[in-house]
Length: 466
Image 1 (tube, rainbow, N blue to C red):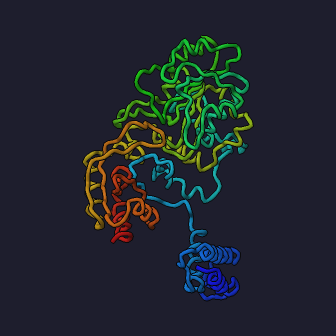
Image 2: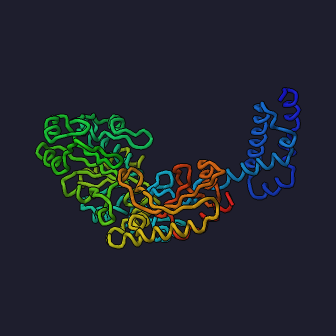
Image 3: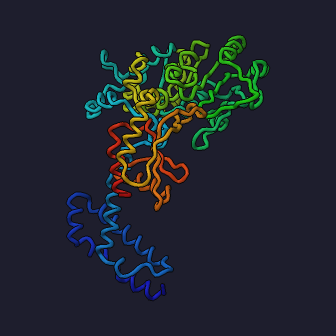
């Protein structure tokens, strides 16, 4: 496209004032602030201007400079700016704790119990008996100590914050001994050595990547030692010729030498996972009983509440943690604590978890139920070639990374559409369906969808590929 043609097209673009005078825009102005509407119009004009200037193949024409076309682009931008960007989604990936999709699904009873209360004030940090200000942690501490056997508890906004706060409050300026095999990196390049450096504690590595012995810990303790730190490998596994020191062994060493023992459990299970067909994960209570002075773990993984980092342990140490300046910067808000308290109530009766708690309901799903659900979904999809077969899903969010969950999946082949493009169309559909791709086929796992979601998924396929 020649420069003169581009200039002619640019001159044909309507002015913002002319666009504001259009009938369609008058309707927008009745619902939205003038400043927002004007911003969307300017963005639309600028986008078209850039397309014209960068057009080397003559794809832009007079139709792209008309008011109707500009308004079409502006309307899309207005919708994008006014519609919530965090919205409901259907998780058909088979990953139960999908970090990008908000991790754990909150229990319906928890959400229902909060709906009316969140419309007004709540008793976040006040004692109802005295009417005086009190620590917000007390709203959940009673449940955490009951379920874990710890003396006290506090909550911050995530487990990474919990790690930073514990080290800063209890071990600043001191050495903290960690096995080389536990120097983890989690999402977002969050590395334990970096966190320790920022906290003011000094990392002391012991053992080898695959083998650490009790004598390694004992030999590293000196007058500068502040704590022994065990980091449970929630998001990775080292197999083969390995040796790791048990928490009980570490507790014995720490007790003999008079140093603290900190246990970072990561996912932090409150119940035995074997009953759900999963490998054993150390529970928080087991850590406390093994002698850990402080235990920290996530609230939004195996507990299934909102994002949070829970710290439990000795009363005197929790008091020091609460008084640290970082505690205020990292504290949890009212919605986090409300969801956590109500979710923790469910763990009083582990036998009912599979009935009441979405995460454990998915884990406990019967093979026959999963197969039937997959067959119903396959029967409802009319686009492409559809197949029902066995597959594997995962707990997700770094929990039990090597343990697959046997399941039933629906695979859809769309010969005329690349699988990546089809997956994008399903994500951007009104139903917002997230899938995975295997061998150029769309794959949907029956474990992470509900029966009520079969119809919306089928409708999305019909709209996009019917």
